Amino acid sequence: MAIQTALDFEQPIVEIERKLGEMRALSDGTGLKADGEIARLEKKLEQVREQTFSKLSGWQTVQLARHPRRPYTLDYIERLMPDFVELHGDRAYGDDHSIVAGLGRIGGVHAALIGHQKGRDTKDNIYRNFGMPQPEGYRKALRVMQTAERFGLPVITLVDTPGAFPGLGAEARGQAEAIARNLFEMARLKVPVVSVVIGEGGSGGALALAVADRVLMLRHAIYSVISPEGCASILFRDASRAQDAAEALKLTAGSLSELGIIDAIVDEPLGGAHRDWDGAASSLEKAVLSALEELLGQDPQERVAARIAKFERMGIFDAD
Image 1 (spheres, helix red, strand yellow):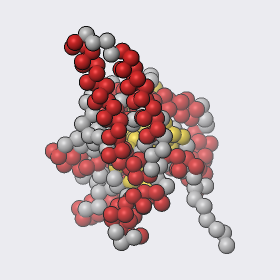
Image 2 (cartoon, rainbow, N blue to C red; image 1 turned 90 degrees about the vertical axis):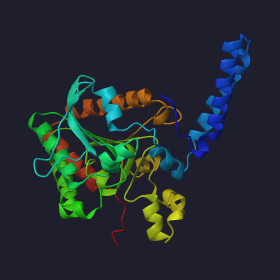
Image 3 (cartoon, one colour; image 1 turned 180 degrees about the horizontal axis):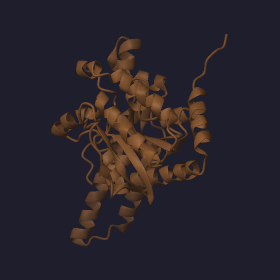
């Protein structure tokens, strides 16, 4: 898979990759003995990658989470659930293509999988509504969750949305109620629930699929109550200060782990998930299966009680 877009902070890496590619082509085409130079460039490339991705700022992480070549829900399904059967519609209004939901097997475990889905190009983004669900999308997700509960199947959700769609039509059809209903019902599901933030975790639109026993997060994903641009517009009256807002929001996996909002960080291939879809899928599969192995052995009532208590403990406040 070719990398189509390089972020500003990735430019030193891209330059070394270019030189390395030229040296390999020269060596193959002319028979020139360049093994030593190729080895030196490979070592330098590894060092620059490690240095770059070990100290990312909040804004750089936002850029990675939004990377146009980052794998989406359907990309993970293709690699982890080859027998996935997609289910459509909310049995009330219609089908929302920004939510993918269905049944399949991951690592031999039968499960329901639900996730946000963005588009790759303009036409696909319009079809997927840029990954921003309408109320019927959340109702479809809940329908599949309840089906999974009926058959005793664990629920896996993949979170990747800028937020729920804020249009007038969505509000008229009960967007707020649909999100609230998902929060309420997910808290009470008797089957194990594992959520993974794979890209953008935006506000209530993300939380509506993330009330889970285990909330995991890919290393370069983000999870926040508001976008950096929205936060900057409100706090600073200046959307161009999104970089400052990204630092203040503590939206990275590391910060959220320290705050107890998420349960574990899933490592990505060096350089980000967009550089190695298969590697990212493998890491995600191991993390999800490990969480399910632990959860499936628990008593359902105890699991529900622990899930509710987990979310009740979140937040820091002054009792005075």
